[in-house]
Length: 423
Image (cartoon, rainbow, N blue to C red; front, top):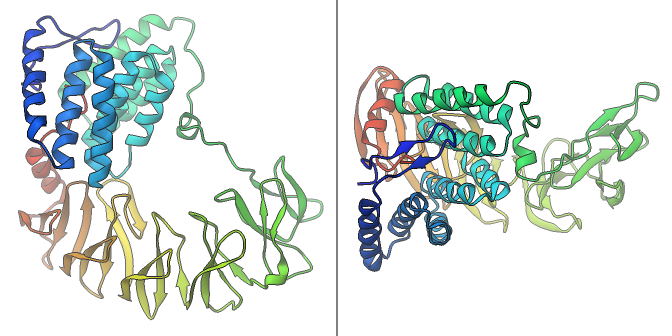
């Protein structure tokens, strides 16, 4: 009923308008009835976020806000990235209509993950552009609208039509004034840029712009608020904070050190390996002496001991180190080392690929010639180069009959429902 509701797009405000509200009240009543019996987080997230959409269109913004906030909590409890992003976008749209632009823009930015389907990302870009438009940030709005068009490449006529209307409206309003310069994502999220390492040409030493004068033979970028540095007279690394204060000195003897992430860093006193994890107070957190290790992400880190595996921040092995590699290819966004934000990783068992989750459970057996992670599925290919898809339980979804990934993506798009954060 929501998808077929005859709303009108106002070219002056770039907001949806409704003429007949009775049908929307019927939708709200039906959603309320369903919520009374809904227990699973996934179901409650969907019903509450849809009720937030209907409430927003009716101007019931306080109720819509409460529904949107509850929907996000239930969506996050499922651990599903796409479901959470949809709930966040719908809540951000409510905040946007309430005039709480800072909170709305932060939520739009958080929701717009590169791991999402292009269609959903385009919708979020469009909504972000509308929010910027209302703030008089016309250049920023145009950047978002162009981002939406680039993601869809003309495949969504309704979105193209709305954006064309929006661009015409901006053109009429910006004869002489385009508003503030576009903000970066970090600026919208309130993240401050850490001091950058810079080499002094005269002395050849490294320091940090505006923070620490040149005095180091080597200087790593700041991460997690700290950075590893090495003085000319010492082969060992030291740890400093953004004020240049020493946290760990060279007497610890770390000949190799990786950046901090989630409060932990891998260090070694042996240049050939022997990695273990410490915290900022130089306390041993994860022993092990691994041959190689990658920074922690969502409480997990890749480690190599013979093969690649996964360990948690308590030193427990989550995935046994028996794989040739753990590199996850995404439909959008390219390869990443380790796990996606949703907690899935592609494992290379030698000549075949599978998928594990953050608990170490094998979701897809390593029997496929290639595996690519889609936000609601897994694209898989066989030895003949034919593509199909599995669902998130590893069960067959689309037969391996397609020669191109793009054809499988179109088929998944056709099967998707509830994928739009706006009506």
